[in-house]
Every structure is written in structure tokens, then in C-alpha cells.
Length: 257
Image (cartoon, rainbow, N blue to C red; front, side, top):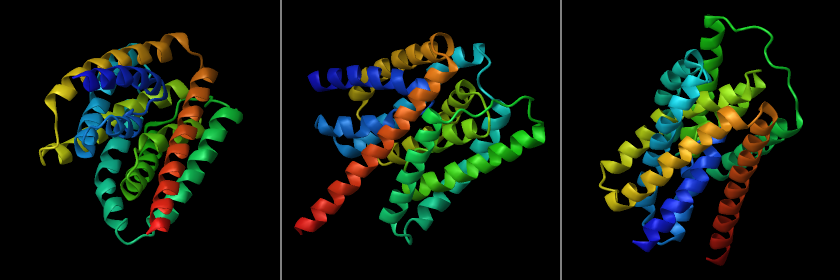
């Protein structure tokens, strides 16, 4: 039980920070849970469900502040969902380590753009057709590459939306809405195989929900546009570093064989 309490505290901290960036905390929580001695498959199932719980809890604040762009989120969800399994299928035949290095390069580039580049925000509201074109393009990219590389699409969606000229706060809040559905789909796949610990979920869900509420408040009320961009960039650097570490560990393990 002590392990689960520690997991709940860690969940609160990471969820609060990553909710500000609009991405789920599963990519960090899974290795943390595993390091605490929790079965990897259970860790994956719980962390994915916590993503959805956290983002659901964050939505009331985001919606009150009118930060969620539903016209952008809807095409992303509709297009990313069917393309994710297509990307997963293609991954069987592609050199995954090479693709991962390419993706790491994209993350570093995107993070650098978020921190050091200062694009001008859109000076007019996009038309409905433009919103669907943008959302469809971002959804296709996030869905296919997310399935191909086995990573969260939110890491792709946020920087692309900001690059397109959308306010960083709106980009983060909109991505958090999309993450609800993408994480639920991933959780369902694990849950149907019986990979679940309800006691772990109960404790960590409290940490996830409270962390999301705090993170949503900080992002919507306390942080300015520049601070949100800096945090998103830092998160992207962190994801890239984690992927590099994982690849290096993989190469080192094979070198010993």
C-alpha cells in the first residue's frame, strides 16, 4: 500500500505540470510505476486511464475560460482515431529505431521553436473550412505517427497548433480534450486483457484528478502566454530525452548479447 501512496503523490505532481502543457502524464508515469515495482502492463493500463481522468477534470476550467477549440479538436479526433491503428500496422515493417530518431529530432526542433521562436498570433479568426483543414492535417499527423511510434499524439499536436499561429493556451487546452479519447482507446485495449489494479487506480485517480484541477487553474489563470510556451518546450525536451535514454539502453542491452 505504501508503494501505491507514493505513486499517488508522484501522479499528483506530474499531472499538475503536464496538464498545463496539454499532454497526458502517462509517458512519465508508466516508467515511474514500473520502477516502483508495479507490473508494466498494469502500469500502462492505469496510466492511460489516468490520462483521461485528468483531462476530464481539467475541462471545466478550460471551457469556462473558452480555451478549447472544438472546431479544431473534432477533426483531429475523427481522423487521428482510425489512422492510429494504421500507423501501428505499418510499424511492423518499418525500422522503428530509425523512425524514433527522426521523431526525437522533431521533438527537439519543436521544443526549440516553442522556447526560442516567437510567431505572431493569428490576426483573424480562421474560417470553419480552415479549422477542419488544420484539424484534419494535425489529426492525420498525430494519429499515424502516434500509432507508428507508440507515443502520445499530444506531443505532436500542441507544437503544430502553436506553429500554425494558435494561442498556446488554446492549443494546450484543445489537445487535452483530444487526449481524453486517445487515452481511453489505449486503456480499453489493456483493460480487456485484464491488466488492471483497482486499488492502485483508486489512489492514483485522486492524485490525477486533483493535479489536473491545479494544473488547469495555473494554465488558465496564473500563467501567461510566454510561460505556457516555455513549459511546453521543456516537456517536449523531456520526452525527447526519455526516448534517447530508452534507445541507448536498448542498444547497450543488445551490445552485451
